[in-house]
Image (cartoon, rainbow over all chains, first blue to last red; front, top):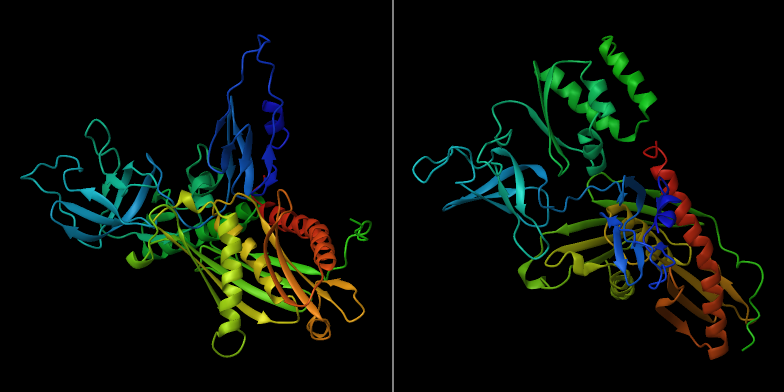
Length: 241
Length: 221
């Protein structure tokens, strides 16, 4: 069963492509293989169909998904995002995360918040938060605490810094463990970098100039091979730009 | 039935396509067939007006802008053709209560405009990463005064023809998703035209694959 997937790993697939399997005989004692299909793959009867265009990726032992370059974010439970508070209404904040609906964020979902001790959140503030409810039928809901009630890096952003948008593919590359881009970037200036899975990136360096240089570099990483990127970063590090 | 269309693939003009060329829309593509050129942009899944909200699927809106002047009846008819084709291919139930907007801008019309719009629409939807059950392509055929079927005609050939047909064909089973015809056609001719279009669709789908692969070539490594 794996073979039909394994042949196509790292290949570009288009919607409508089908994986068919020769199902093992029910009478035989072969243990059935399990495959976990991630984004872009859908089961359709006995087949698996591709519904997004992109590259087929594989994570051992049995996870497969389609890695696609897109710009519009669709909320997924458990993902951390950067949102903009757009409204305060009673005990919830409405947060724009770039999806099709505004997400709600309760004022109690901050570290140390109680009914009497409200968090200081104003309209226009940026928050780094996690989805606890995100599905197609319900309003998405965010929290700024983990299951132990700790902030764990989430919450309202401080002063300064710069927020910009990149494609969702680049964000995932930045967040991948041992990301090459982040490794290259860390050789330039000391900086704070917050990456939300909704395509928003926030950077803060010592000066405004350095912040803007970092933002421009990250935006230009979108369409560069690793060699081109390293060459560019080297020129910046040497002070040519 | 005797269909005398076996053998070589029907002649089409050169295709060209560029994806993700606009920065603001979520997906964009330009598609060129010979001298005909269309630019498409897709926004979505985005917030939807309450009056247009559909509780179990996404609302698809298609807007077509002519090269000169305001959109008229002809554009509205084309919009409907494109919308119904896209609705058949998109898995819109995965994004209920949201809106998808497809904007098609005619850049130059040299025949087969509706087919080019369909192709641009498909590439833009793919670029936006919207879930689709299959791809689709558009093919225009004309029957000239001698009864010959010409695929992918130019504007001149369209004017000299006695009938004009445009089909949308899906990529999995090569079925006809949409057809729009003008002029008088016999059943035999219609069948022949469909068979020819299905044959021509192979080349378009191959072109789609090549063009998407080129776009992803940098992220492959």
